[in-house]
Amino acid sequence: MSAVPDELQIDPRVTPIDFGDVCVNWDKGYFAEVGVSPPQTLLDLTDPAYRGLLVVQHPGTSSPGLAFLYSTIAHFGETGDYTWTDYWTDLRDNDVLVASGWEEAYYSYFTAASDGDRPMVVSYASSPPFEVIFAEEPIETPLSGVMTEGCFRQIEYAGIVAGTEVRGAAEQVIDLLLSTRFQNDIPLSMFVFPVNQEATLPPAFVEHAIVPTDPLSLPSGEIDDNVRRWIQEWTEVIRG
Image 1 (cartoon, rainbow, N blue to C red):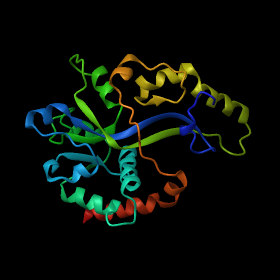
Image 2: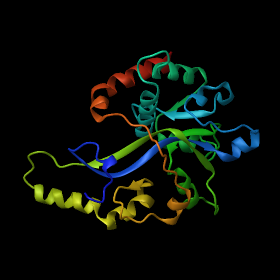
Image 3: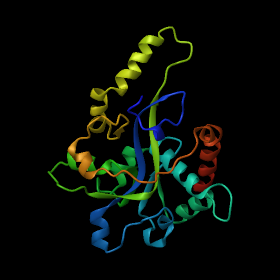
Image 4: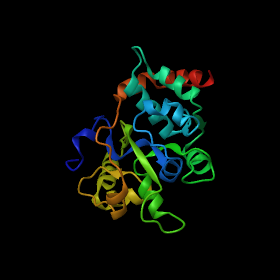
């Protein structure tokens, strides 16, 4: 555990294993071709200049979709003159498209990865190295850029079931997941970051992955208490 950064040890009941940042990705080729600057902030996405350009995922069926919902709640809040529901109302009115999951959004609608018509997609800050490594034709630079404002940090955890009769074996599994050997395999198998600071990142991650300097987050207890309500309220806003 000593090799895991303190800022990732948010919930003492479980152990962080990896992390990634859910961000809006944008198609470099599209924005260069139309001569429009890509968005820089969450609020930019409501600008008519980006009408009909963004595809997101349903927070009830998609992990990145839920993370993006969290980012809007963390950024805009639930009280005040302009809340997260106001923001989603503006996104809806700006013709945001909702897909069921990441694969549909990325491979069916995102212009940098498909024949779709949406040059902005909710994805990950680590998507650019994925594009370089798995390109059908070799490329040296990613096809998409990352909007680093408004990213939400996802942390994946492992825990031991209370009262287990095989606690020793369970602890060995946790130790394995945190081992340098296992952590070294995380970037290219899951395209997220290892938590073990002694792990070695592959060159493509070092060169192309983005690590936002100020990702958004919400307390785990607040999420536990409100997630069902938030998804229901989001659904009502999108339905109009």
